[in-house]
Image 1 (tube, rainbow, N blue to C red):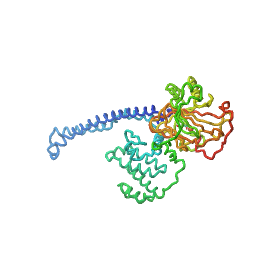
Image 2: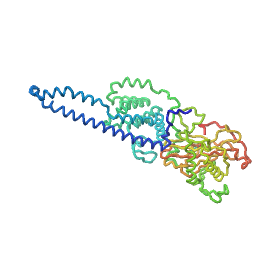
Image 3: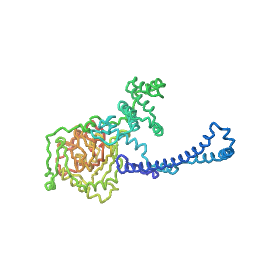
Image 4: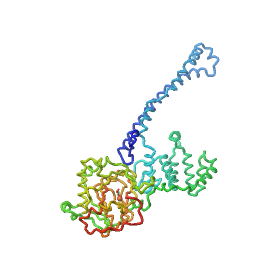
Length: 509
Ligand SMILES: O=C(O)CCC(=O)C(=O)O
Ligand SMILES: [Fe+2]
């Protein structure tokens, strides 16, 4: 039973609409702050006038107090003034300022992102940094994987990235980010940092700990010595850090994607030029004879091919219309009991689904039909399709699409995959085959098709290991369709069961 008291959680990463709400809320809160400042300002103005008014007679009396006090006007005024004015001023001082604005900000707090949301955003950004090898100086200039983005990040942002890398045992990167944080600290913002709970001494401490972890004690000492509050405690601090050094990080803190994965994602990676051809497929079905599809062979063994302009805008819009309301966090796979290591960060929806708008059936049937036309293979209408939506930093680690034997005997395993791209990821988000060192950019309207099994034997083809690079800009939406072995019963009569055992399965597809 869902907890009806808490509002449904927002998908700030995957949903631009939810981020838009945040942006509008930020704007509202800023106007609210300005109103608060105005109220505070008018109170200050009144107090300033009081201070001025009360100061005038005091200045007049200065140095000639005796004479001043013998004047009956002054004596009368002083006693009356002292009897009542300060009491009223005190009452006025005590009056709270901006009660409404404080109430407003408090009321809005329930719409703020939660701790988990902030962590998720930092992790998503971390994935982008790691996969695309973004350095501190790149971040200062908004440079990611060869693209310059407007804006940059602040000292506090750098600190949170540094702290995260420290926590995950990446001391070298952590030290880099913390140093950039210190470069960006503005002394005139000191009072604001105080309010925001950010202390430069914390940055120095963490930086010193990074150096200790990297066995650079001298740098650690110098770091501590360069901060006025830490200098005199540097020796005890250093011995404390020595004791804490090389604490074993639990395995679940390992979140970086493997380097072989990252390298293919980067813009520096180019697929090997192949001698394969681009041509029109007019043979797989009678339909294609009338409307041939532009087809690009990426690999012959295993067979991987891309088709262009398969779905119309209207069809794409229709799939999104029926699928998007069903999107929830995509599962991590049952085998993956480790909660922190995220195989996939995306939203997913299975279709068809009980909750699906029944008017969505025709478009699903068209997809099954189109798959048949393109591939010559049958996808039965009792099979499920999965809509997957990746936001910034959204990714899918290496996996196989076959399940290796756990499917009901009536279906067989997933012999082939058809992936429809329903949106462009403007930057990042390619589908990659890590063993084949092949990158397929996510482009709307395109379809990627490959066999997960070897044609003759139906042996599981482990060379098809693949994943999805973190999205940098834009939202990537794909529709994954799996073609099962036994659905081909009547068109592939020579079927022989293939090998089902292989040693290595990093994740579950
Ligand atoms: O999103 C992608 O590019 C790959 C998706 C995928 O591998 C899958 O759904 O099994
Ligand atoms: Fe897959």
